[in-house]
View 1 (cartoon, rainbow, N blue to C red):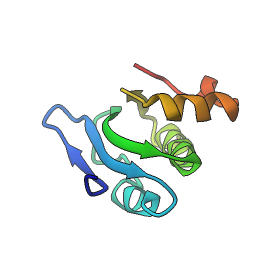
View 2 (tube, helix red, strand yellow):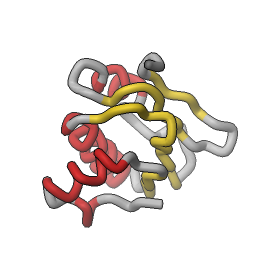
View 3 (cartoon, one colour):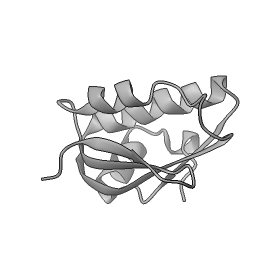
View 4 (cartoon, rainbow, N blue to C red):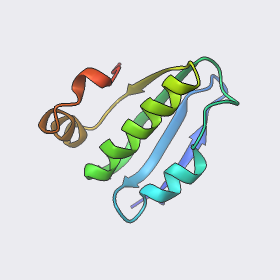
Length: 99
């Protein structure tokens, strides 16, 4: 299992890796608590995420609100099926811009 973390690509995409779960979610939040240093369009790519739980959805909701407050557009790419199910179960799919 890969260590939970974040990588920034030269095009501004943020790549998450590892597990986004209750025991790791704080690492992701501490690394991204603001998008002020990024372009107006923020993309978070989940292609290297191995597992998620409901805390991943909560984290995304915080990021969505942060982006809104900072007048940024946030999109999520390659969201794992498990997370998509959690998004639908929690009926928050209208808040997510998915690619």
